[in-house]
Length: 213
Image (cartoon, rainbow, N blue to C red):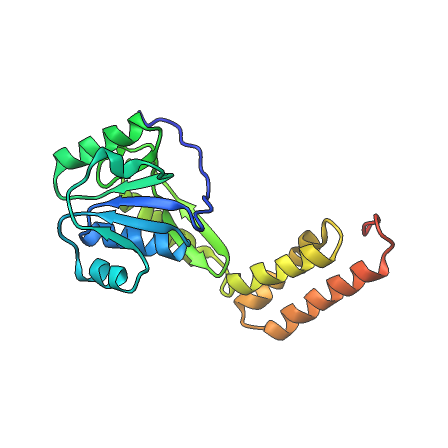
């Protein structure tokens, strides 16, 4: 029976993250980490061309040798993705011993971090996890969720941010109740923008601390 997981999004900007391994799976992890702004260090005796290229550009550090437990010092998160199960188990055990959160590719039992299947639209991220039970099921669910999301969700999130910053609490709920998401889904940005302006204008006209009836 799967253990319950606590879903969380991490701010990894300028945080040190270790990737053990530098093959196809590791490349996928590295891409996501760099996109999140992490300081990535890769430890592996050989590396895929993309890892080598990123290291040459100074976007990550590649340590050209096998894993050592000391590689975990100062690390907040580790991804273990070598082709050697024994190395993966050793790295996972070393991470646990040092209190470092670790994800081990294809070994959910050795992981205390599980990476969800993700849909991103602008600042909006929707994550789906099966607790390590089946990555294929998570990907299938992600695709179903993605198909149900309104188009231009990133635009909606940016407008919601603006309304939240400039208006009283509850303004975003009023905006959504007016069907702005449906406008964007139809591609009618003019109608959506008009509703944003109306909500902001209404917030400016009401005295501070009051709400619509």
